[in-house]
Amino acid sequence: MKSQIEDRKPQILEWEVLPPEEKRRRQGLEPLFKWLSLIMDEFIRVPGTKFKFGLDPLIGLLPGLGDTSSALVSAFALIQAARLGVPKILLARMSLNILINELIGIVPVVGDAFSFWFKSNARNYRIIQGHIATPGGVSRRSDWVFVIAVLVLLFGIVCCGLVVSFLLLREIGKLLAGGH
Image (cartoon, rainbow, N blue to C red; front, side, top):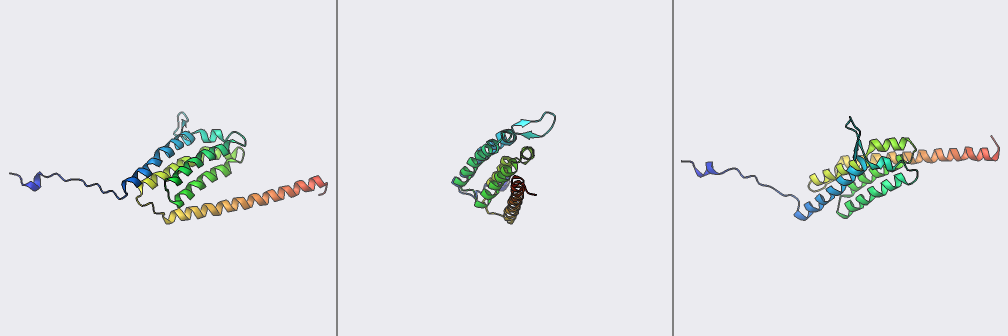
């Protein structure tokens, strides 16, 4: 005769840290960012390789409008994330991914090649996946280090761009004035 203790099967208890409405809200972001990542960054697979790309680098080939259009599509998803309460540090990281893709994408040829590799929407999808998986959504020290490093880098890029533009305009001015 088996005892009652032996007859009982261990029950697995599921602990839900997040309230159900918070959990649904977080999970509602995943399909949007997954779809955006797929269409914009991983829609087409190069035969015989694992390399995938999407519409983002292809749209970026259109001079003037391409990179801006791509950034606007990404920004729409970012607005949705903000509406659904994604922490500001994650929104900052996602914004920087879009900004980096936009800034470097402006440079002809180099920017287009960069867009094939960088895949800002896929990066943002991974950020959303991490947010969904982490109860509480507390920002980590590495989040802040990342944001500060990118801001410093962007500041440096902007400063270098201003210096180069100034020097270029000065030389053009000299040529137009006929002086050396």
